[in-house]
Length: 137
Image (cartoon, rainbow, N blue to C red; front, side):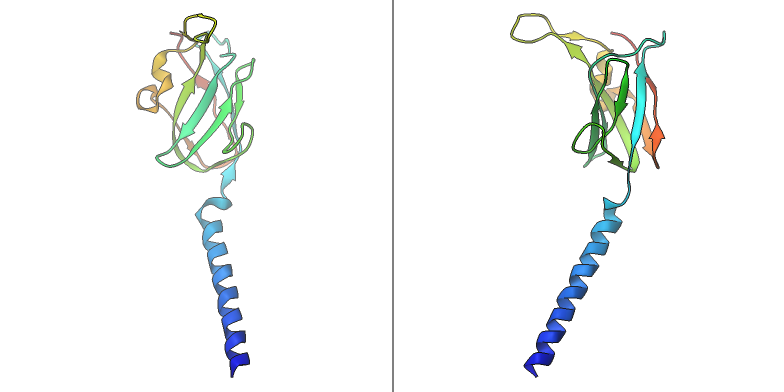
């Protein structure tokens, strides 16, 4: 009888492990996609440094902006993949403000530093390119 109970217990544990693995997979492990783009000013010149953040209430993806204005979003590192969904976007681009005494200078309009004021959004449904035009300060 103990052998039957032990076998049944092992099957129950195996079933639970498989069940929870399926839940984890269905809740977001399988829906990460690449999102890339370019950030430019209205005259077509690129924003040449900074970072971009795609945010929801409980999740974010980010990327550094390269010297040609390109970005590639990631969850834990720039250049990875992010979850599909609805995002608000902020762009952080400043120079100076360090120990050398140089003043902090915004490279883009300060409204882009917060998702509450940037008015930038994106619906990520699959691998995509999302280009953004920003205003100078």
